[in-house]
Image 1: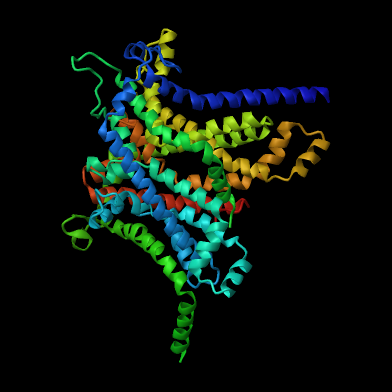
Image 2: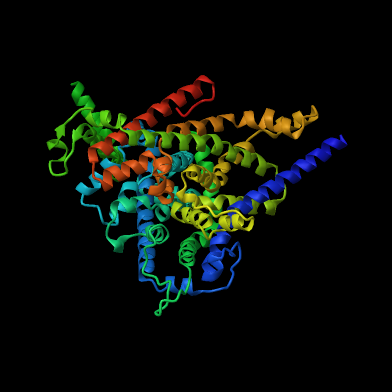
Length: 290
Length: 306
């Protein structure tokens, strides 16, 4: 009996240590990049920067915050996220509401049509050519319309709406409420947590996706933040200065890249602790099989 | 007579539910335009498509493009890379979230559990540009990994430019970024296991490992199976956003995957028909795989997706 308790305790301790190590594995790279953004050129090239700044400098952030392209791409990302998410939510709510009404004729057909898009798609090139024919290339719409409804989120919300008691709908209808009123005054207020979750899922998708902009956007003024960031990191392409007017090295290019990464991550980290709860809930919602 | 009845029925439905149909219009229009029109668009895989002539005007060439890529060395490389990276991700990456969930489930210290979970979840919300950027910085010549190597007197390595490391970097960075988040669904499944089962086992003298092996795992096996099916269905689609961020011409030989290949050939070189044929092949294989996996899951009595 005693030995069992002891082995259990050792097991628990080992478990905690392992988990703590994994947490640190996730944290360390981030700290490293943060330190790079704040460290001097000499400290970086001599490889002395680990997880805290060496030879503190703020010039990298100073340069970044003077770059107009940074603000512009930030603005594009915000417009895309806000407008895109608004369209996502409107279309998803309307469609989910109708599809959650079990008596609706043709409901099964539309559901199958939606589900099929989850397992088969036309692919990259036909979608590109479609956007080209619709003259949507090089517009913000090319980043918003092709992902206007996520089949997965739609099914999630439809299932959630279906779990709202039918009796509530009946009594609202007896009081003379139309479908618009029922959706707006009854369903949406009753499913606020689900709404919050879906809004966040959509918003994160818009904020993080970059490959569509790589494909569809040529105009540098319409490039979202992620593409700007990629150009700085991968292509070494930016207007920012790493040398002063006499040609002496001000900061390391690595610091500039690191500062850009940190500046792009800040919005996510600032919001995340307040909304993690909703994300987790969203996964749980999705786990419930119809 | 019969027709009259039908029309009347239709009228009645429309009168009662016109609002519901109206609500469906934008969503259905979206699916038709942006999902089904591109599916129709795949016919250009069987044509020599020219943007000037359009789909209706371009010449029909049958299986020409398919025959070409099946005998093409570059495609063979790309296909092998895709399969290998996918397989590595499956073999090494799929069990990690299950393990994490089992481990997290045993933690009884509230703040510790919460902190670890947050640290493990948050990389999922970083874009691949950011996470890939972090990977690039960490592995660069002045990054922390090379600092450590040099500290131990070893030569610095340009990891992302070396063929022998590239696939491992893709697989490991994916595991680090996504495993924590993927563990949530297993945690939820574990939370749903009937506690009476554990009590009964403990009465019979079961140890922790027995409980995990004989109770927890069997109870969450249907969740595992469903996620495995979904995984199998997308075995040829392994995340263009990740590879596109991390690869470069030096490692095309081991890192070029179907998606990045379709992008380069289709959009950069504008070989629309050929690239569409490759993409269609990918989609069809995915469709077949998901049906097969689902059939298998049903056969083993684990439910399946439909």
